[in-house]
Amino acid sequence: MYQIRREGAAEAVAREALLDRAFGPNRHLKTSARLRAGRLPADGLSLVAEDVASGRLLATVRLWTMALGNGIDGDARPALLLGPLAVDPQAQGRGIGARLMRFSLAEAACRGHGSVILVGDPEYYARFGFEARLVADLALPGPVETRRFQGFELIPGALQGAAGLVRPTGAMAPVVPSRAEPALALAG
Image 1 (cartoon, rainbow, N blue to C red):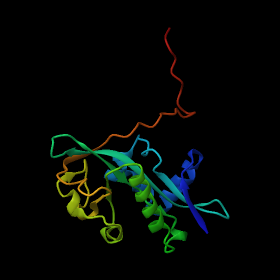
Image 2 (cartoon, one colour; image 1 turned 90 degrees about the horizontal axis):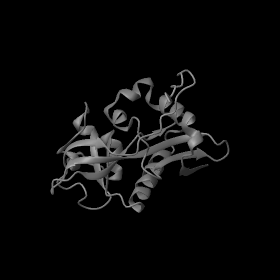
Image 3 (cartoon, rainbow, N blue to C red; image 1 turned 180 degrees about the vertical axis):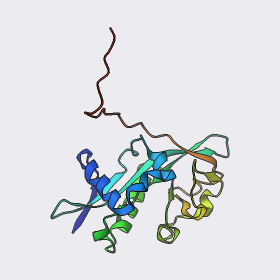
Image 4 (cartoon, helix red, strand yellow; image 1 turned 60 degrees about the horizontal axis):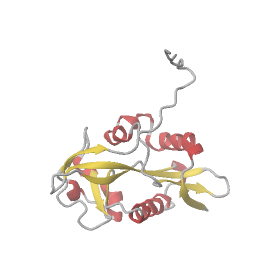
């Protein structure tokens, strides 16, 4: 048995280990990962599935705020970038990822977001309503297979006319110096 809930700040190490198991060590090189780098997820949209008995993380999903090129009126429009959605390899095939995905989309809609974009397997994400045609006039700042770049409208028409480059707009993550880095002396 598992529960879906918001990710806690203390779970960063477990989340990163799960992502490494699911996607491997080169996951940080992907275009979508570079869009997320140094940013915080959208408020309230960092979710996990946790095994109730053991407390072990079974799955994770995070959504990030982005600006989509120029809209019909010339202004960039807001959207969410979903990813990564990952299920621990030992827990796959139980519907956990699909349930977490549906939960995250419902939560995004409740928070007033209009659309979600992602880079992922079209055969998997089609069941949730994601389509490449919705982002056909958008571009990511790096290489991506066109068929894997997809969008979903939480509000009908939210992606209509969206064109141009996708760029991150979310809050920057605080920089925490490591113990190995020397402290900077302040001149006074």
